Image (tube, rainbow, N blue to C red; front, side):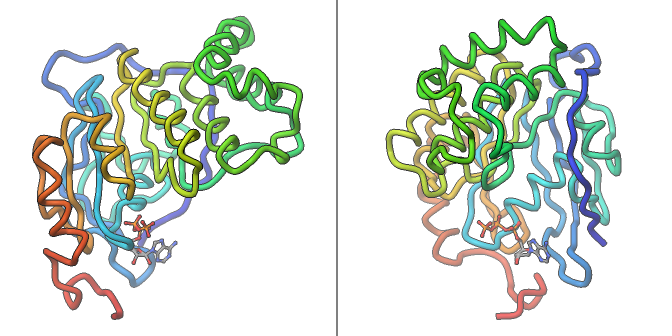
Length: 266
Ligand SMILES: Nc1ncnc2c1ncn2[C@@H]1O[C@H](COP(=O)(O)OP(=O)(O)OP(=O)(O)O)[C@@H](O)[C@H]1O
């Protein structure tokens, strides 16, 4: 049975990077369920150090569940989660975060009564310590000028898109080893979609491994090397991002998987 756990952050306690060929993040034959409802059936994927993988598929395919398994918010019922080759299956989400994996979940992850700058400072202090805060703030404002303009504004009064940018900026300025982003562009104005994808490209350029969960398929494929297609809790295709469009078309119109086996109710 899946177990939901709260995610907190703390000082970065990541281990030194391992040798070449070891993925930054790997899921091996992961099964996961919400009570009696089985959501994932033997899902395997790997994100190389500094690499980018898009996880795509229709509504309810299990994409967010994969993201939650990666970050420790959902504990797999079978299979393993590896960070830099180390088995972290069942470890609490805060420990996984300390090892350098950051999950930006669907929705807005900001403190609405605090200002933009207070949100950033809190997040940076927890990750890089007080002395690193000034430099992290500078990087965040340089990457996302919209936040610099609104640094004193209460986060709760920002538009939805600006809040998404803020939740991304909170993690990107500290160069996580691995970033898992879930539906980053959902409901955003095009200019904000550009801003968050520029942020992701910058993170990759700085060496962060990225797993992008996204229904906005074309944008996601543009920022990664490889794609994994999920349907009804199973991987139905994997390969280079530039070959994924045809496979994605099939998956999004219901190709692959058997609803009866997946436990779907209709
Ligand atoms: N907390 C939960 N409790 C029970 N069932 C859940 C829960 N979260 C997700 N599910 C179910 O698990 C399945 C996979 O959900 P998940 O959110 O991982 O899919 P998804 O591919 O991310 O879809 P979407 O794009 O709609 O978010 C769905 O059938 C969903 O209804």
